[in-house]
Length: 143
Image (cartoon, rainbow, N blue to C red):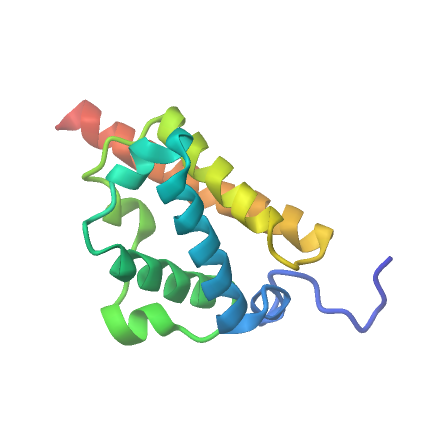
């Protein structure tokens, strides 16, 4: 049950705080990449990442900070980003999108987030994941 003093996820930095701030998001990203690198179910999406996977970890953690209402760490270091456009060169179909979401869901499940925030976060992550899939499909059909 929520009270009137609770800020709902998606407002201000409530989601960023619920994720444990920068440290919590870095822990989530490490869990995600560790799982992706060690579980054969995710080999296809792991292979899509550049060899410098530390850079990929850093970029995802920084992106999530700003995306969840915290500091805009990604743009401070790397400039602006459009997630679908940044992934348009990849062959992402429903299969790869679902691999990514499954891997992230398993990483989220390992975190000390509330059940409500875990559910909220995965619902929110499904939106850009689908946008990436659509952009990649459009590029395949026009390219």
